[in-house]
Length: 82
Image (cartoon, rainbow, N blue to C red; front, side, top):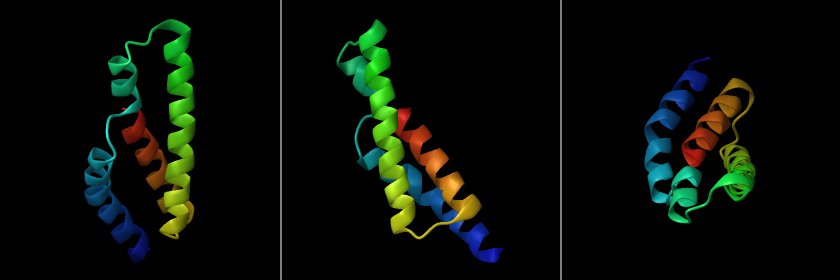
């Protein structure tokens, strides 16, 4: 239990820093590209899918399991999408 809490705290501190380094969020990128309507929806859907895959791979690399993995992945995707 202690490891899970420490991992969650570490992720809460380190993840926002990592998200800023990756570049613009999906919403910001769609605004930069001036997308609207179906093109924006399609772009955001693909961007979220790619973010989920990247976050899942990152969680696997960090050897996270259970609630820590779920929490990490959910926050990572949310930060990536914007």
